[in-house]
Amino acid sequence: MTESTAPSSLVSRTALIGSLEVFRVVCQPTDADDAPLRWAIGSMSVRLSGPEEAGVLAPLGLFGDLLTIQDGQLVGATARIMFAPDTTTWDDETPEGLNEITEHFAGWAAHMLWDAASSAARTVVALCGTVGSIALPRATPPHDLILVQAGEN
Image 1 (spheres, rainbow, N blue to C red):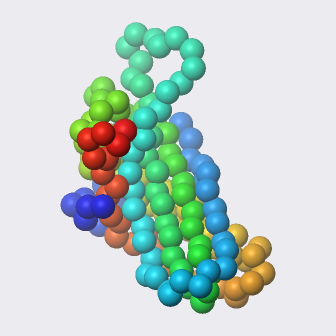
Image 2 (image 1 turned 45 degrees about the horizontal axis):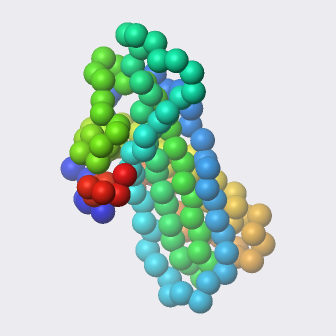
């Protein structure tokens, strides 16, 4: 993972949000030692079924992943956002292109992804019944970037 170079304040970008969803939540007992919160953002390829339309920008995808171990519980959640960028066509089929998307849009999506993932993590902890609560910041913490290495795509 790479340290984010994006400013911690809101980053203004123009994009149309298609969806924001949580697609992984976990709360399970573990014997592992407590681990600090890990919050990281990466990009993923998005393929829609159906014919591509000329002049329509392809959607992009980012995911935010949080993981922590507290009081004998492993807690994690992953949220993703799909969006259409403003006017630029992006390469989401190569590692370099995915990394460029991550570096460019992670700061823009960080708050939305954190709100969705941290809310899901808090909910699953409440439903687990084995741990009282976990310490997650309300404000979006600094994020690392998950960059794709050549050959991993």
